[in-house]
Image (cartoon, rainbow, N blue to C red):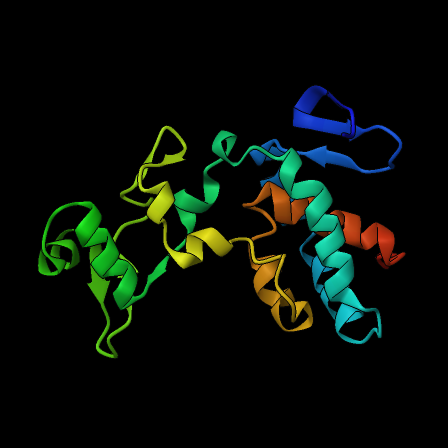
Length: 187
């Protein structure tokens, strides 16, 4: 187990590593705004590189994600639009001991194409930064921030959209910049 020490601004320095974890949401949001051009340059750098990104992102995510307490944040539940499959809607109805029609009316919105999404942001099921249906949470919730999946090259843009809202993404992307030896151009 890696030892950590917590510092000012929610930074956690991992001993024997150069990486400092940042968990302060205000700081992360500010960095996101300040690093817009840098992150766009990084996206272009990654898209045009031959770096094997999936294994590197998986490794960094595996190191970082367990060190971040999502219940101290809950930002994804307060800010993301969540897709819900028909099977998930039915499972939710069963969990809540109600009809599918009642679940759709109270919690979901259906597009003309038949797609279901949670009808409010923040999510109905968020209480004290915890999911009240955690065991039955939706696939979009279980999979976020998607850094464990293959095909990272195709998801860089979407990942960077969440850079300012998710401490896991922020820290993985900053570590990825270090590991790929990315150097932003100074203007």
